[in-house]
Image 1 (cartoon, rainbow, N blue to C red):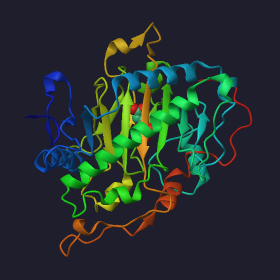
Image 2: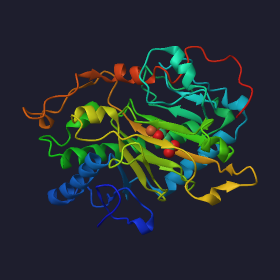
Image 3: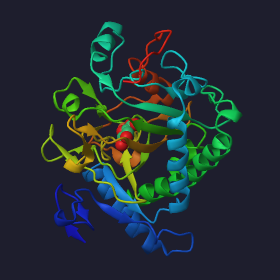
Length: 362
Ligand SMILES: O=C(O)CCC(=O)C(=O)O
Ligand SMILES: [Fe+2]
């Protein structure tokens, strides 16, 4: 283990280009000893405390399954716009499912009910398209599927992949609880049936690098996630950046590490832990190395990523863990219900009435 950029311990080093902690989850097994589990849990909880972002390797989502997931994502986004629009994201922020064409969703860290402010933010378009998937049993967030014949097998695969990620997320939540020293290390599981998670396929189409450099377009602006934890799988293009906790306002690159999960803490776990675990700002911008551009226009290579948002159940009340507050460290946040917190954060991301026709991809 070596210490590198940031105040966390990592297995990488600056020369290998990894600036965030890397944790090997292989030793976290049902038959591992208590000590082995604690050691891994502690590293994970410390990384979540110090950085809020961590690479997890040997996590249990198989490389074959991941390759398949990226294959489906590519086939999905290769469909014509007309075909993708057969599964349109509903208007407004209430239901976050189905296909969002480039520019439909606007990511930001702004919490407001002022629609004019939302329009102002939209002047810089997010050049990405996405497809959101949830549990088939989530009645408040019903899935919006493509007709089966448009992409046969897609629904079945994504449903399987969703539950594979959920399985691993339960282990990771337990590891965090163990590392934090919670009296009941499985406490968080009581609030995470898995039915309120969200699988997101993302495609960032090529755009001229200059547009990202001069700020006239964005890929994904800086934001924190809203749930408990997020798993992120990314291709080898690069572009994800994480706020440097030692120098707020500056960002460090989260380089691609094949088959790793990049895990980060979301706002609700931050609130549960009374800020002990950090929900760190992150963004997607230019790919990290110059050969990610082509041609005179320096077209930015397409990028694919797959976040999996692990969220408390819709009615879950997120209230400071008893282990995370005392007289010298009072409770910072009022209890909040997941549904309400999500809507608060999502308000400006989708317009109540989206434009009727979509004409251009960029
Ligand atoms: O595409 C990525 O790498 C990051 C996506 C992300 O941060 C998000 O969807 O919340
Ligand atoms: Fe995010």
